[in-house]
Length: 315
Image 1 (spheres, rainbow, N blue to C red):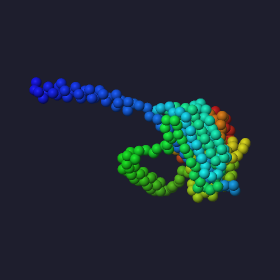
Image 2 (image 1 turned 90 degrees about the vertical axis):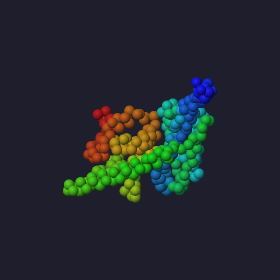
Image 3 (image 1 turned 180 degrees about the horizontal axis):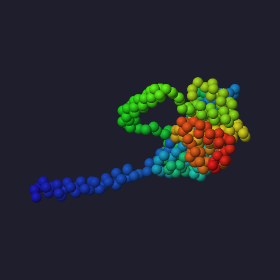
Image 4 (image 1 turned 60 degrees about the vertical axis):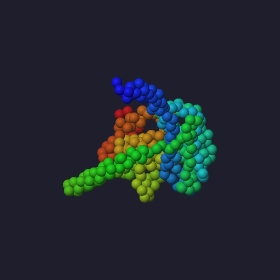
């Protein structure tokens, strides 16, 4: 064995082995160490103008999106102007939050918040101007709250080319479909979302909502309709509140609705129904949902739900 080989065998190799074993635990700790993360998503519904100002629904969803339990959580919603008319805190895992409400603010506190747990705060506010923006703050003993992040920028850059190709393909496919329909001698659009939303509002006798939809410049969305129904239910009493609840349930019969819109519909339903809300009803309605392409069947199911709620759910 040469001197060089002896140096490698008796000095350098043991040093490398020792170094690997000394840093391995630290690498392991970095990889598996639970991270603390507290995030929120704040959404704002459309403004409904009136003689006394502008009303709209604010909704904040708070999530422990990390892997560590958090303690002493505090969330606050503040209005620079206007006032909070009504509010509701929704949670489904026995969190028992403490709520302190004033004319222009709502503060929610929690002693503990486990990974994966969520809490939602919905409030109907009256604003002097539609441009007034609320302020939302969130923190815990371990970490400051942050707005839910969008996908990483690097990932978006990698998907730019794929997105452009898919967009081009979709335009080509839609053009071919239109050409084939026109060539076949007939062309008809499936029932649009604005038509089915108008049908729901009209069938429930929500005349103010129907009038607003007739005069609106932009086409309504499922999300906006869900917030309009929530505002109507919170502002109304008795029968009007029940109509808004039925309207939200009717939206769950639309299979084409996006996942985020459906979550907001369910969240608004929880606010209006309170203790009477059940996941079983939402599950049944979701199972009975049909596409807007099947116009007659969708209208029939909405009609059945509105005409006889219990019979429809048990059929």
